[in-house]
Amino acid sequence: MSQALQTRFLLSGNEAIARGAWEAGVTVATGYPGTPSTEILEYASRYKEDIYCEWSPNEKVALEVAAGASLSGARVIVTMKHVGLNVAADPLMTLSYVGTVGGLVVCVADDPGMHSSQNEQDTRHYARLGKVPILEPADSGQARDFIFLGMEISERYGTPVILRSTTRVSHSSSAVTLGERTARPASGGFVKDPARFVPIPLYGRPMRAKVEERLNAMKEEVNSSAANAVEWGDRSLGIIAEGIAYQYVRELAPQASVLRIGWVWPFPDSLIREFAAGVKKVLVVEELDPILEEHVRSLGIACEGKSVVPAIGELSSDRLASALEGNGNTSAAVHGQGAALTKAAEAATEGLPARPPVLCPACPHRGIFYALGKFDVVVTGDIGCYSLGVFPPLKRIDTILCMGAGISMAHGMQKAGEKRKVVGIVGDSTFFHSGITGLLDIAYNKGTSTIIVVDNRTTAMTGHQDHPGTGRTLLGEETISASIEVFGRACGIKNIATVDPYDIKPTGEAIRAAVESDEPWLIVARSPCPLSMKKNPGEPRKVNQELCRKCKLCLRLGCPAIEWVNDEIRVNEFLCGGCAMCEKTCKEGAFQAASGACNES
Ligand SMILES: Cc1ncc(C[n+]2csc(CCOP(=O)(O)OP(=O)(O)O)c2C)c(N)n1
Figure 1 (tube, rainbow, N blue to C red):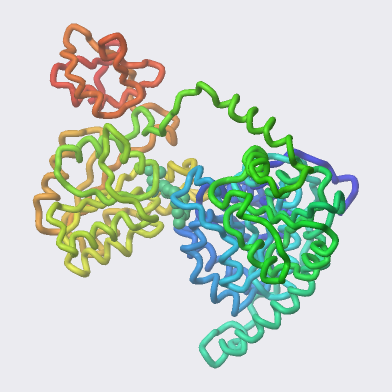
Figure 2 (cartoon, rainbow, N blue to C red; figure 1 turned 90 degrees about the vertical axis):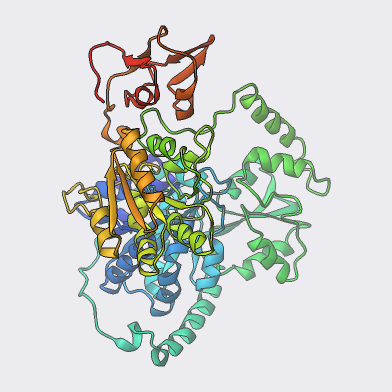
């Protein structure tokens, strides 16, 4: 690396991962959006001259594409959020046996505290389950460095490597020393070797044994890896910390001895033993599950961990401080600092009103939920902006499980004999991610559910990424725009309607035809997300107070732009996007274009 080009920059963890990938000579990057991982691939696509980047339809496909590229000799990263790894778990478990040729790092971002996720699972379990190493950076500098380390481990041992980030590492910025891109010899392409790449039982059994040999070798190496380091200090308390928890520990207990673990699994047993022998008492600080703690105990080392540190939710220095403060057994090294930090955090949020998330003004999803309000149906929802349809006053989502389940659960309820009609709702990105097979199931197994795809022409919830229906790739090229209706027909659904959800009446009529039918229906509610288009659908509305009867029907839309102030209905012109849905719900004609000149409806 040339010294001349070395510079330090403030980068977010996600940007640092992308930068690391570019510097490490990665040529293929795949993934599916999901907070907090999404920006990794968006940043990687800035290096599109050197890195082929794609949003795959889902995480399983992303990992499989990456596996193919790796077996052809390319260095690859795959990006996803923690629940995405559930979807990609199938290829991961066997890729562990088949192994890699070019380095392959699966970048998974966990979301402790569920800032924007349906659960807070701990990705470290997957490392153990799949018998693959896992690295966990504590800041952006390590995020970049661990891409290099991951590539090197992956190529030396022929294993996929997981890089686990968490929201705090992915989204906060710290200093990173940038370097040049590493020149790598051109790949000679895929070299056929069925005994190595085809895990039929005959070849798979020796692969299984090799995985164990590989793990044993890694168990040695991990003790001397620079990713793990002892920082000796006051020996009355030794803290073992990994990932972001290391930062909180250092902030709260600058005097304590710390074993910082960045190569998290396989565990560095000798290092842990050596560290524990050098301190009076051991405390393990890790975010989420007691994976490290349980292992330390299994080595016969007495320690504290989750008896002190919360196992649920995101850690922070404040939370850790108050946890330690409440525990009389822990070191004097941290005593006192906790109280000050906790008070500061409380003061920062005092008096602030709670702001529940709502559908944006002019969101087309609102029309579907409003129209659905007229029917006594069960609605199996899914994950996306439209999940917000669960809140009052819309209250039109009854279940959510995981991506794709909005369709399949509707079928399950109907087959279980649910008396009411069951309506499944998924978004367009969700439909392409994992909705198609559920729809096929309904058609194949003679279901009668109504499925609504709320097609806002983007993956809105994660920040407007493209998907197979949008006609554009991540690299900004024009491409096919897969048709939801054509997929529906190909699955065998005969009744397909396309509606504009801003037109509440025809939308309601289509829903009525569907729910009164004893056949399966697919309704595509299509209208682009105004935020994604950067364009409001129309001119702001205002209320003609002389016409308004104050019936408050319009408030049932749950539109943040419609306000009940001083005993009258008003439209907040700064929020109103001019979708005119209020106009269509008002029987008195009290809503009008603010200029009085136009009526887009
Ligand atoms: C397996 C999995 N991968 C990724 C995510 C992150 N995620 C949540 S919703 C969503 C898609 C939202 O797009 P769409 O279905 O089009 O609905 P919209 O938000 O546009 O209304 C994604 C990618 C997730 N929750 N689960």
